[in-house]
Amino acid sequence: MNNMSPQLQNQIAQFQQVQQQLQVTSNQKIQMEAQKREMERTIEELGKAEGDVYKNVGSLLMKVSDKEEVKNEIQESVETMEIRIKSLDRQEKGLREKYENLQAVINKSLGQGTE
Image (cartoon, rainbow, N blue to C red; front, side, top):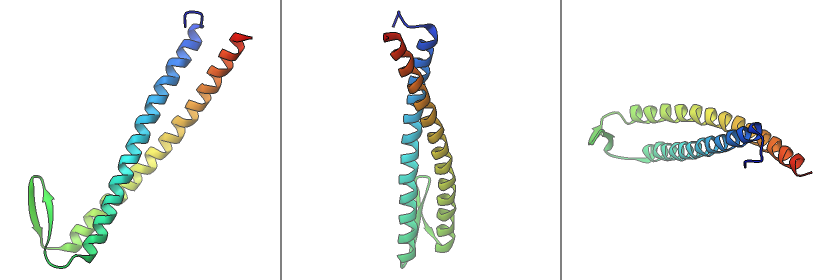
């Protein structure tokens, strides 16, 4: 690493940072997609539910008087989650592009250094 130029060392550091950001962003997106699927299943089950329905409010379980209101609240949360997922997807694509560009630059620099 001592034989590398400061510019190449900087590019490698940037590459590692982008790699970490990409991993974090990908993990966040996966978690949000799982939460969204869970909310969609909840809406589906809520549509099938007969009798009393309860929801968590903090550490309490409260009986719901209007099942449709709860269903609408969850649907709004799903829509918000979809927006967040799309945002993370755009961020992930940008990071992936930057990652690939830095990788190509580093490989080229290392390839030139060995010739």
